[in-house]
Image (cartoon, rainbow, N blue to C red; front, side):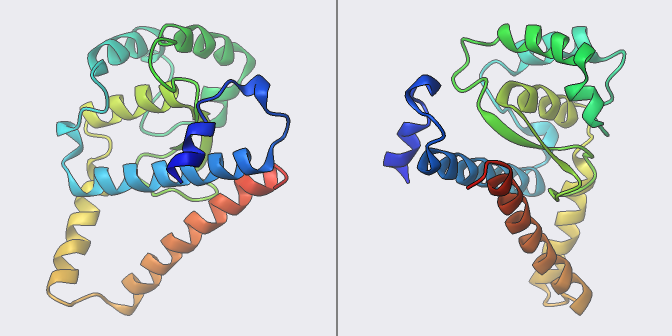
Length: 188
């Protein structure tokens, strides 16, 4: 995996629809989403620092987007409309010195929900960081953290209900579906 991951840092011009690179990208994006979700469900989100420049990212994000984008619940238009694409592009270029700033990353549209086909969108890493830093600082990820804490307590006492077991299995299934959807989109 680590040898393959180094391929992802090479200039895009070196590859023309290379299936192995696309498969590695899908795998890395899904792993990142899984790790991040595990992080915000085990550590109080307001304590997290995602980068050494969180304050810079947060300030730039709030100056440009706080008046019209609600990070708690995003729409595709917030991220992909022609008008907003222009603003996001300018924002992203402010952070071109950040490693992997333009790397494709999976983002939850609704901060109160887990990753799913309906709740996941592909964005650049800097968009992900800006939105998740805002969510963490404003307590918007606290719902999933508290919910996970309740589930951890139940698991420690062995009180996981059949419904909770099905929900956990469904969450695993959803991550598989997200991965397959990405692969299908990329024609792998």
